[in-house]
Image 1 (cartoon, helix red, strand yellow):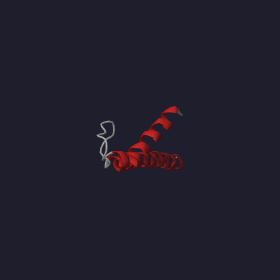
Image 2 (cartoon, rainbow, N blue to C red; image 1 turned 135 degrees about the vertical axis):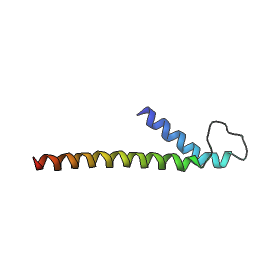
Image 3 (cartoon, one colour; image 1 turned 30 degrees about the horizontal axis):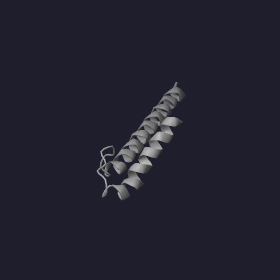
Amino acid sequence: MLASVTIFSYYTIWVFVTVIIQPIYELKYFPDRKWAIRIPIGLLLMGLSIVGIFTSSVLIKEKNRKRE
């Protein structure tokens, strides 16, 4: 729970607050803003792929079990 709150807070600050602060201060702890889109999209694609592979393997096993 603490890890998810920390990650959510970091991401929120990274996306919303750095827009305001970036011109004033040089921020070293935040990656480039393009990664604010690329990382969640990559994680979403990876998660959907894992769910799809798991679902496919279960359906194939069930189909093979019904044949026997």
